[in-house]
Image 1 (cartoon, rainbow, N blue to C red):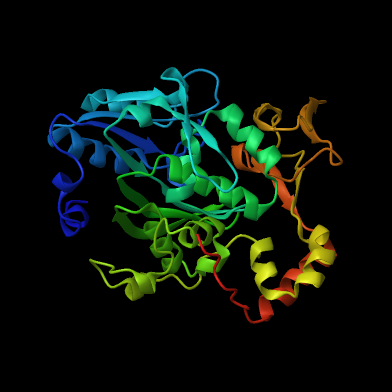
Image 2: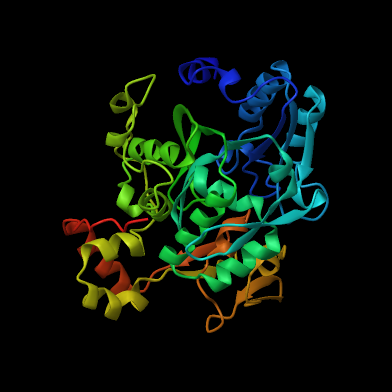
Length: 371
């Protein structure tokens, strides 16, 4: 940690004594198993918080988590922050503020008041795959600065990947963090952000630009920048360098840490759009969408999926959740929050064939849009 910050010019470059700092962690749910790679590990967060405290900063940490009771208790975050004297909040406790932004999708964003009132925003994302957005890291973690109800609304309103990515970049533009430190010690691969499996990488990625940190993270796991919608959109707007070739990467040689067999989510709609002719993609798009379905043997009828569904397409009855498929918008929020991995993603047989064919085709790189 100290080495990474030293390469960036030291913590004093970002924080001075007495400054108010809000540390945005990634805390998906109250799942107590912090070793699965689904959330910022509390031990990782503790080291960052201690450094900030020792530097004389006024530190607060948190996330917006839709949960009954104290969402930070089961993961150990509550006790950890109490032990080192850091205030830990569920962002709704401090409220939210309407912040104008020159966005492509949004004109303004309701952002955590704790983040807006802070002199410095420190972003602590987890490196994970994501079954809807492909990758979740520094930019996606800022979505948690919005209230859960607004996030649900945006999942409903912006149900296609590209528009959703543009919306996430709008959020970034409203409150960019001054410092991002990504927990890639143990990442999540496969069906992230909650149902994948942990993968030890032993990496810590830090930088002043969230887009650049995501670009390096994607490079480390072998994910092309064109397939990460937030990186491509943010780079096109001039909000950060989206390719490692545009960066001066300090510290260890990145090539020594690349993981060629890192399991990605199923080949994404964005990836297929880059590979297939436009007309063919439009015709076949319906076959490519992943559909959530409930495994009755794993479902406990806890109600988390029903509570988060932005279109109320999930009912609880006879001891398990049931998805109303005609009403489902395939936002995959239910898959994201299920701590029992009972919500699985189904692909139509034709869609599987299309994805396999698309993976074998060369990528046709398109000219970037001007900001």
